[in-house]
Amino acid sequence: MIFYLLICAIKLIRLVSEVITKMEMKNRATYKRKKPGTSPGSLVYVGEQKIQNVKMYLFDFNRDLFEEKDIENVEEIFKYKKNGNITWINIDGVHDTTIIKKIGEYFDIHSLILEDILDTSHRPKIDDMEHYIYISLKMLTVDPITQKIGQEQVGIILGDDYILSFQESAEGDVFNPIRERLRTGKGRMRKLGADYFAYCLLDAVIDNYFLVVESIGERIESLDQEIIVNPSKTTLPKVHNLKNELIKLRKAVWPLRDIVSTLERSESPLFKESTEIYIKDLYDHSVQIIDTIETYRDLVSGLFDIYLSSVSNKTNDVMKVLTMMASIFIPLTFIVGVYGMNFKYFPELEWQYGYAMVWVLMIGVAGSLWIYFKKKGWT
Image 1: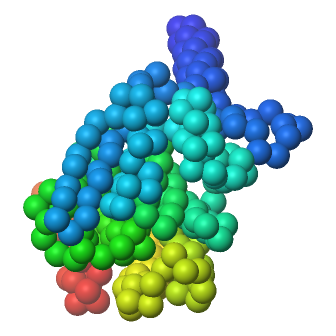
Image 2: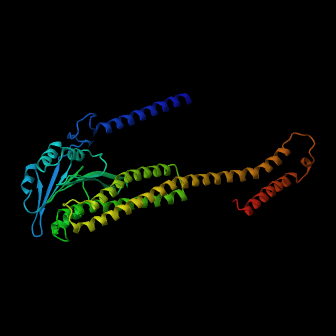
């Protein structure tokens, strides 16, 4: 029977392993990669395979005018170039290389920049191409249910009177407050130039980092309390997952400081002197986020030590209880063992109160040991 159960367990383990392997292969199949040896500047989409259509939105505005439009064909946006207004074109989805190529050709964007836009695994960076500036960064979000961190690449191209933003996915972004400010005309957004609007886009992405970092801090506090009060088998995987998410967050945020620092030192005519103070504010925010992430990394590393200490203390408590029980029952076992010997002549065997006295002796020994442990503070 045991042998049969063992065989069933082995078969079940193999089945689970095969299912996991197939799921991993499926995930790899839905992720498009660039073939080795591809020539520089080749427009190849790198990222999760998507089937939804690319969505394009256009915002054309100045101090007094505002136009918002959904774009069906790429050719519709071409008439807005050099029209005297500031034009923001947002492209949700970069998996359609044909659309990206047409936009690149019309706005005279270098093929290497287009290649970086299509590579969603690219490290955040900044490139100053004289007549435009390209900035690539990661947009981070937090799932309100699972608390997992989502990551999406955003590419921003700043020209003299236009801004192009390329988002990896069309499932939402952090730019809704900017759209509302454009529609209502509140603030400086419609009054200042394209450089200030590019700053607003960067500021929206960086401000959302604070919400992500705040959710990480809440999870660390919750885990810290759980580890101290009642560590379990599920606690350690939670700490490990949190550590991995902090690593992912660090990879997305660390290059941001270099990007903003480059913008701050840039002598490009695309950024006016009046916008420099806002760029300095972005730099302060990026440094603050990086410092917070490094602090949280140290705290998560400390959680492992706290977990090991808590588990060790819990084990020590169990061993202490077992030791006290053994210490109490050892003399009782000795007494019972003595009177369990099969000798014919035992003085107490014929005594009328012998049985009661043995009980009194055992209870007295057990009680004395318990009082002793109590005074020592072991109970």
